[in-house]
Amino acid sequence: MSSKQEIYLGNPNLKKANVTQDFTKKQVSEYLKCAKDPVYFIRKYIKIVSLDEGVIPFKMYDFQEGMVEKFHKHRFNIAKLPRQSGKSTIVTAYLLWYVLFNANVNVAILANKAPTAREMLGRLQLSYENLPRWLQQGILGWNKGSLELENGSKILASSTSASAVRGMSFNIIFLDEFAFVPNHIAEQFFASVYPTISSGKSTKVIIISTPHGMNQFYKLWHDAERGSNNYVATEVHWSQVPGRDAKWKQQTIENTSEAQFRVEFECEFLGSVDTLISPSKLRIMPYEDPFKENRGLALYEQVIKDHNYILTVDVSRGIGGDASAFCVIDTTTLPYKMVARYKNNQIKPIVLPNIIVDVAKNYNNAYILCEVNDIGGQVADIIQFDLEYENLLMAAMRGRAGQQLGQGFSGKKTQLGVKMSTTVKQVGCSNLKALIEDDKLMIPDYDTISELTTFIQKGQSFQAEEGCHDDLAMCLVIFAWMAMQEYFKEMHDNDVRARIYQDQRDAIEQDMAPFGFVSDGLEEEVIVDAQGERWELAEYGDVQHMLDFR
Figure 1 (cartoon, rainbow, N blue to C red):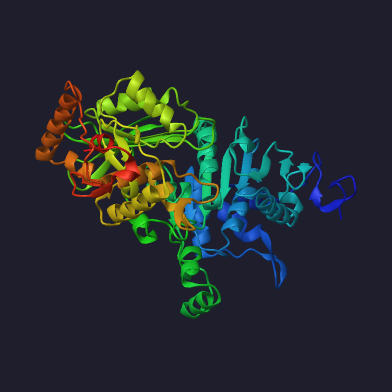
Figure 2: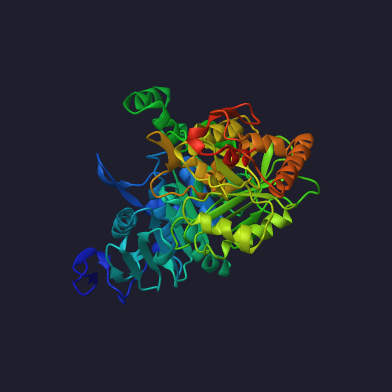
């Protein structure tokens, strides 16, 4: 039994720092074996708590041994595992080995919630308490959120956020259940932490999770599978866990549901429930890396001579919440394809028009359509009047027909863009679903696909899931509404395009005529427009106003 001078804070299972340890020859041999082989150390000396049997030796499954070997050999690891497969236990066992046999190293245990991270540290501490005294390092610090050993090694447990590890250097960062970390936090984390990770030659990152939609974890996993990042991928099937067979599967489905089983045990990347685009389609939508990316602008294709491009814009106030966004779509032939996108939540509305026009000019003077409900009206005004960009599309109110797309209209009921109304959103969402699911619109951008996985039905409309964003998704909704407009179809018909130009020229000449429009006061109460639609004069005022909308 150890004396009180040798134990840490009255815990007989913990050795205090600066206590001399005598070793037998056998212990020295064992120590050297453990230091060399983490699998050997875990198999022989790690203990865990069993609900039925209490503290018992940790008997690793075959796939767990394989995981430890990968952790040891490779810097970057990502693993997709079913629920209740011992994924956290095997990682914490490896982390304990790492801090015991490596001096002056820092380890971070990060989870989607801080209590979860502290619970995993608690498991590691329990395993530590059950080590033989001669294998232990002396304790300098021991609490729920951290552990410090006399060899200079430390472990920190916290939530996954950029602030959790900012300004600190770590030798291993373990991200548990990373799929459950909100996308914007996951992105901020990697933007902040990755420079620290990449600065060291031996720094390790271990990412383990059960899938939860198509998010940052999905992207890292998919990129690992196709070899476009440095992560070594490990996938574990539920049948690799002893005791799980067809009977167990059927029983689990009966107690939960088929969909839940597919996500939690089959490890399928299903999106949110009630997404606009079907989950089966979202799962197989391929994405690419942009050939150029800077400050929110990602380019996927160089401009092609004589191709037609459309740029649709969704504007925010630029105060760090929702982002201002636009996408550029090649509409020359079917399928249409997104060739560029922009997303930035810091850009001011007064600066955004210059970026929009610069990109539009690059893509063959692309047509621009802005959403003008709020601050978007200011952006459209700058594009039209200050920057004098000619290819800004407008919309005219046509009574029960709603907003009608066009260019160069005049009159009181015309605006420099489209107002997002219930009707516009319904039509846009319906057509967007058809375009994507019928492979008539190709989206190579991961961020856009990610937004679509959380773009869900709420009431009679669609919007971003709580804590998510839909800025790029709304750009696509605007485009899909536009694609249903007669003017859009005419823009892509060369013969009709020529007729539109001639009609506009005739209208200008008419406006310049010496007497303009002359009324004899005998007009009919109903007129018929160029599309054959009938309109009552009482709804709009005089005929002259209607003629402006030919």
